[in-house]
Length: 114
Length: 113
Image 1 (cartoon, rainbow over the protein chains, first blue to last red):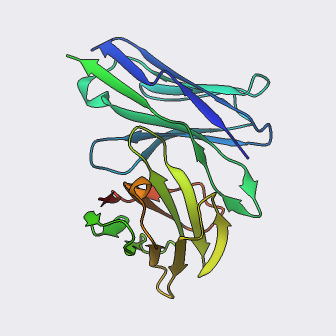
Image 2: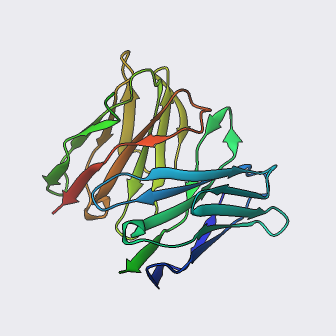
């Protein structure tokens, strides 16, 4: 099955700095890569996603890049703010038997210091 | 519109007991997926249901079972609880089993003592 590795496990930055979280996946058949943000006491919330036919996608201060050859993808957050502090999860998925079932990384705890 | 609702929010059980967790999907969503999230790790897939049929099963023992009802709500059942079953159990709903638009509930925090 799919295996997703995520680094770093903890990332501490100053407000206004950029943050980068990196993930690798094992199954070259994976074709959809979402990123989720999980705040304390809440479930994960989709913040951005990218499909295998696209190399980069941007939405305001967040962007995601995908390198299919190397099987890795990254989340970039610019101009970080304290409210960006949360746990971020990457995921990779293959449609198996007609179902979308993402495999998640272990998560990155992002701390933005004011 | 209400999001994905899960009940109860917190639960404490003793080893060997049985537990039932409940999930109500977003109105119009027909697929429900269950995940286990151990502290400090990412969510691990347990089950996916669509139109009351099981569409996927993760690597969990037979002590774990689930079902989906005609109104698309779902239950996750765990028998013979172990200390290692302590986790946050998340439910996610989507329009159908192939829909990328997962919406997660806030989860049920299960503690086994």
